[in-house]
Length: 298
Image (cartoon, rainbow, N blue to C red; front, side, top):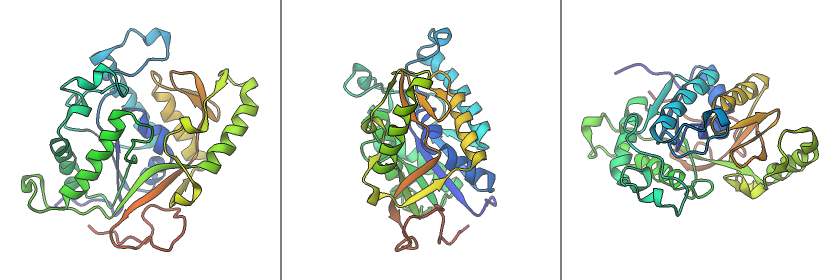
């Protein structure tokens, strides 16, 4: 059996760029500390809206190929070297926004059989043997079908990977100890948007988004963990986001997507613990280390 680092973190995301926006600081911190950071991206985002005019000719497969290159560049900024595409490149296509005909594409992630898609992730889990998994909540953070499906695939894979009766050909069973969902505490979001609106006259964006436009905003009491950025990890996150140039425009401490609405660039990242297999996080308050108290099993 291949020897692995003592700490192993798996992140499951829908499209290239989601990982940098949600978890850039976290990924940079743990990669620099020698942990195995494994990113699984479920689609190449072939239906994303392109921001730079000079790249708007990119659509479909060409856009997906370009976004994979952006993903590689972003991961180089974060120091992450283990990057997988669920089922292999092009296995699942971007499903588009909820309610559009794109959702009916038989090759899109939204239409994928849950266990079939989850078994692709089981193979990664049994190989990388992560103690910690990070993904979205059951609404995918904001209701995008690919985010919802990524959540379902991740949570199903946690179950299947631990069951020795499921696909023994994919490796020995592995139980992920902790599962976290991406979150932002409401008080933090409100304060950040208040500052952003005050700064708007000096920013390249005319209008601010709203607090509820940010995926995963919840009451403060639901926050279990926070990973605080320092100068290095905050800069790495911003650089990774800039690498996703088709999708993100970064300006100082804020950014905008294709809607041109400014959002804060959070350099502290927040999580809700939804599974704690051995109870070692119980009673610890807000964790500042996703692995705190875990026995780092091999």
